[in-house]
Amino acid sequence: MANSSIEWTEMTWNPTTGCTKVSAGCKFCYAEIMTRRLKAMGQEKYKHGFKVVKTHPETLAIPYTWKTAKVVFVNSMSDLFHKDVPLDFIKDVFKVMNDNPQHVFQLLTKRADRLSEIHEELNWTQNIWMGVSVEDENVTSRIDLLRTTNAKVKFLSLEPLIGALPNLNLTNIDWVIVGGESGHNPRPMKLEWVIDIQEQSKNANVAFFFKQWGGKNKKASGRTLNGRTYDEMPTIKSSSINATPISS
Image 1 (cartoon, helix red, strand yellow):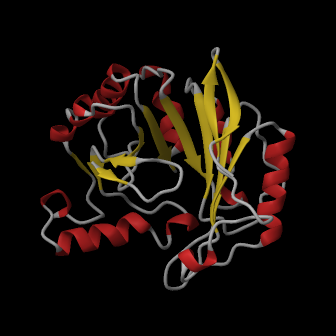
Image 2 (cartoon, helix red, strand yellow; image 1 turned 30 degrees about the horizontal axis):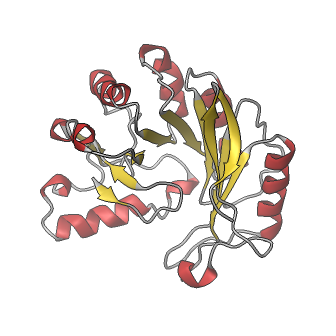
């Protein structure tokens, strides 16, 4: 586990490592770059590199040791729903999350097809937030597949946003995150794309979180929109989801 600089979570927990690219949003994969660095540093967990998907059963005990409630991004360095992750191991990860309702676990996948195929075999407790990555209109079908699942909280990560998304269907979606690409040669994100998604989220009463503009220097680019930050999060109140800003 590790504390995280990702704005919409507190820490990361990686029961699996490694992945393979499936769409345009994967082009400059952050996890791939970090895996190379960690492997070069001699980190045992990353010795197989990024293209080899490995499970790490020894990590399953970690969430039981946390003494205070956490918000946790699960598998920042992999995709739990990759075809090479056995269903039994996915169930083991879900058992850990089921056993620790004091924590919020955030899962994100680009493999919404497998998610949809196996979701009924998983126990979706209220503390498990399930999201899909959507970088442009070519992969909006992931949203429809997410909608079919039994996840109690469903969210979209529109990052890296590399195209307009003018016709989002936000039915039964609880949270939208938007962010631009960063790195040495990032693809640009246009202001009008972000404003349009913000308006769509507002009209659908969906929590909106603007993560970053990205660019070669993402710190300099910042994360303000319309002169302010947008940090809305889905919260659970009386078994319903409401958009509640955590800061502004």
